[in-house]
Image 1 (tube, helix red, strand yellow):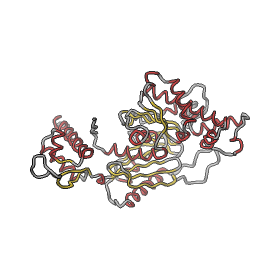
Image 2 (cartoon, helix red, strand yellow; image 1 turned 45 degrees about the vertical axis):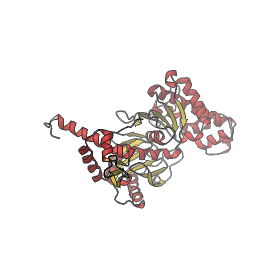
Image 3 (cartoon, helix red, strand yellow; image 1 turned 180 degrees about the vertical axis):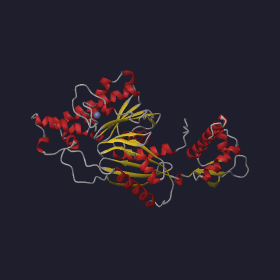
Image 4 (cartoon, rainbow, N blue to C red; image 1 turned 30 degrees about the vertical axis):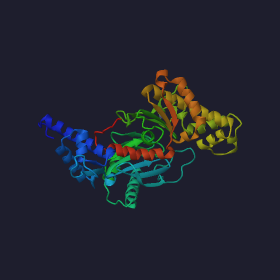
Length: 421
Ligand SMILES: [Zn+2]
């Protein structure tokens, strides 16, 4: 737009976009519908509706499905329109520390193809305790793009247009620049994920972290039941939070909003992955469970865990389920620290619901009961009233479903139309 173009031009474009969003949303949510009934519902002029519908048909988003049964006026039955969900695809990619999942969705978000494979990690196995050998991020992202293309071809939709890609990573991401800032489990730092994948796939790419993706998925399809104002505590190898305000991810200016795992907790002196000391994540995560159990064994406490050489957080949880006192206390301790994190989220964001997601959510009540009790102890009572703390419903599917749903959110026209009953 030229700088001397009148302001009116800009307003006109905004109105066009709003009207287009309105018509598309009506066809999507209320279809099949006729042009006349769209005009009635929107109070737009019939020629305006017709022009927008022609444009949507040309773009493949809407199609005519023939005449309806009767006309209100008693004249010729009107041609009905419906949303064409296969007109475009959305792609969700979750690059996990161990596994990568790709899901292809249609324009309504329904999954039509999925592929999963181990996240590449070339090189010899590192010595115990050392960080994993980093795979070349560019090679990993090129492999992801190849698998995306293969999944689309395998679904019988070669050449279908990708409207948007949601890329989800286990670490710190900057949504605004599309950079993975730090993913210790992948050995990635400052990787321009958005630019690499966009060049490979020829589609816009939106980068989020796993907690944000899980929050969106749980809100729309899981424990959230579309509450909109939801905070998801993502507890696994690390600890972060996905914050939703009216269903949208709250990113912050640098994209790192919700990284509460790196808030310092007084009295804790464990070094953290991020370089600081005493971060909450060092006492409220999977590795924290293992460290606490090892410390208890080293102090000579009697536990079934002493019988095994190597154990992980899952083994400790299993021992706790089987009634092992030491394991039970370790899980409860981590639950209490997670409850502290939940109280921060409740006080800071006043959500309707806190969902506990990530790998640790599978531990269940042994973790959740002390978590709820600690949250109730620490949170402000007005913020605590009405808030519920629930475990994830989607489990390990949350991240890749979130990637698809985020791609869908971003692919929709800028003006989102919300119908309220
Ligand atoms: Zn930290």
